[in-house]
Amino acid sequence: MKDKYSCIEIENKGNFPATNVNLILYIDLKRTFWKFGDDEADVKSKKVRKYKSEKIKYKINYISPGKKIRRYIFRYEGQFIEFDVKVRKLKSKELKFIKKYTLIDTVRHEGLKYLSDSKDEREVYGCIRIKED
Image (cartoon, rainbow, N blue to C red):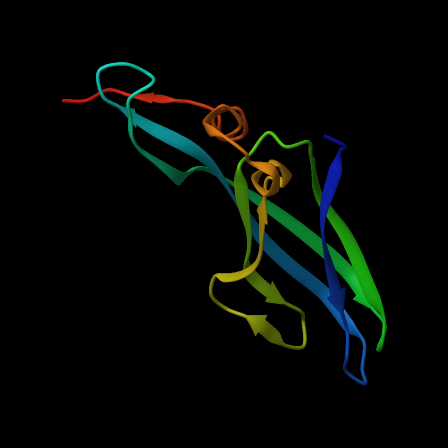
């Protein structure tokens, strides 16, 4: 799989400049957890769940009126079945734009488009064993 980049664009649609812009993002990485019966061929269920969250902060000193700023969040190669990009806070010296978690993107593994059998599914989703009580 070719490397891809997750990025965010911030646009100042106002008539005045935005100064001291603070952006806080969270990337929620997800993995697949499998529940098996007697052996690995006996799949009872699989769940895609969040297993890690990464916080990313950006400080942008100045955005001119009518201009866009693009920031790259991170590079990925297909290591994750899915991840969510959420904005926690976006504010400038002049205004507060986002005050609570806002989901702005969900990225899913490209291989999900091409599943043809259970072997493909296991390769794309990966496999983590959950012990039964």
